[in-house]
Length: 541
Image (cartoon, rainbow, N blue to C red; front, side, top):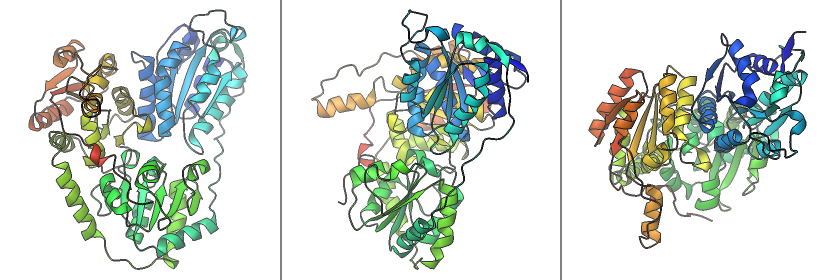
């Protein structure tokens, strides 16, 4: 058996699982770990951003576009807390992010001596925002705990995990047993009775509808086949966008899904919390619900479905497709009906100017397989219902955390993981300033992300709420911004300025042609609210 440090055993185990990149900020507590990174430089890439938050966001972006586990490393205490917002977002988005977190000397943990970066019960803190977390206490434990971390992150409901290790333990050496055996995958259980019940319910329905979320991202072919068999429109919002291409005759955006909801007699919900539909649109006895989710706890969270299927979307849907012909009724094409709804949506969207024109410019400039990263902003809210998406994992949106500042770092991670794809991120002036320092990271590592900053000089949504609901009593909503072109130039990053959609499209084509980081600054004034197309009223129940 080789004699290895805990850090070396950890790195070896990460590489064995195919993790060849770590997004990491160095620091005293992780010095032996970074030395192990150095000695594995021929097999392991280390990308160092300027903030711990960004390290975790980059791992999140890489995990979202690949569907595979991605690692970051930070120091304890402030380092972990800085990364905490990204871990929380990864938890909400079901992303397999792996955190490597330092610790104070092992014998002093939780004794309150006042060590550098000491924090009480760091392991307990990590367990609040991850699926699983553990402490590595010796070199011999490292391979098994890395195996367990990867297994936890990728089986069942994927979610972030974390390992902490004390600074003296990272350096400790011992003979370590290394395994090359693959991780055992749990068998996919098919409940034939539940599949048959779902096939009967959906097959006999007159007006079924399908709702897809992030759990359907790897089941595009199966969702399309089932939708075509059922002649069922497929509604998506944010995480599920691209599962069925927007150009498909049965694909509908959420506002159209809302219009279809009140007359549907059956719904198949695939990998979605179904929160908006259950919580806002309403459900009654005339709507039969089939839910497919890998997490059995999700089915009954708000309302017990008529049929619950537990497992990965693709194999469960294949079983359902096989069982459906026995029960499936003939239905007329819904193409004309859906086209009517799309025309209604196009008319409603036409009043969202300049947002709609900006989004159309982006869509023309960004290839179909390019990755779009949204950020909480006035343009983003419109993008969630107006930007056509043709492929899964190309529309990255931060889920229910919906946190300012997530976008740029996430886009950098997406580009690092998918260097052959164009990556475009949008942000408001408020959100972009959270991570403006990462322009240095983009330049240092040549991560050719194009960031479009829409600058209205305010936290726009906050300001609108204060205007509309609080008698125009404005507080803490207006912003003082730099000249973004001069700021970006100081980082050695290309910059462009656009005042309208035509200038934006021209700037984007030029920016993508550089194959280097670039920023497009788009100053604009007040824009109309898109919220009536997002927060839609109850229609049944």
